[in-house]
Image 1 (cartoon, rainbow, N blue to C red):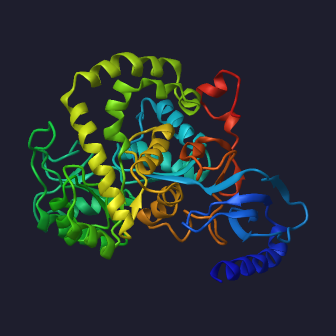
Image 2: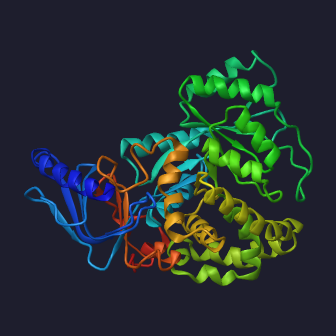
Image 3: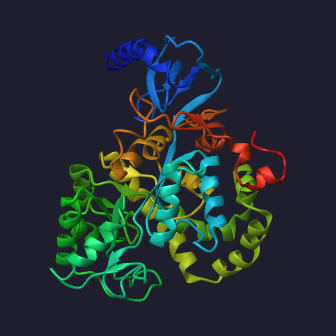
Length: 444
């Protein structure tokens, strides 16, 4: 019944969109299977109408399209929302901007239309963010925290961070942080001492609560680096909006599963960053996959296969992460099954690595349909942007990915990309600064 109402409303919206389309470009994708990101069943033979940068209609049948509409034949293809990574650390810097731009192009090429940078040099990342919003660079939508908020010597506390020790003395520093207009503010709350990491100073939990409230009262969401259930509980009690990582130090309790389900505190998945060490050591052949070959240059692939792989093989950290990644996968599955909100985050700087996050969720017991929801709708919820992003529904921004194969049959098919649409415009993947285009072959 609800789906029928949605389809009827979508047709009405398409009819009233006619006059508006006279001033704005319009695109109709027809006869496509829509996987809308909400977790609902796919819609076969669907039509999706885009006017300007917005989706105006999604229907199981035909929709009324304005004159001059651009038509895209979706027969045999699958349409998903633009993918979102809620935890990246963009490579490069102000002196080596091309490296970052290539990474951003790699995300777009891979179907990621929005990314959240969870810690970087503010001048660098906010500069790129401003240019993306001005439309002067080809890039996913960029949201960013800039520097981190922590205690002196705390996790990630570098010269670009905001280091606080007491209240109200912290307020001028927090105001300076807000002046950079972060999309979210990231705290770190982890004393290490786990895996092979030495102990470091820990941000005072009461101070974190005061600082978090200060940001929240001013309309800015927060996230926090944690790795242990106890610290995650403290962070939620302190009013942090989201969790930047899952629990990896051990199995979670039934009480924590219930807490995550009851509070709906979004948690980033970040499985890839830990699993990637042993994967490279034991299965370097993954670098032969088309998406990696298209996005990674030959020199980087060679370096990964040799010096990087040798370094990983010698580290105890690699073994520890291999043992704990399945524990982390099960923790995520349990939270998701209970109704908690898991969002896709890779903790890396690579579109192909972000696709690996989908694969690890599915191999950990989450369905492919739900993994797509995690990488689209839930990621938008994490960012507080679900009103605009994360699903293929009327009124949302037209960020979508057209696939040549069914991702529900095999989640790796989410990388079988035929077209990327951002803000209603088709991304020319052949013009992106990537190895696949420098070789002259271009995307499929």
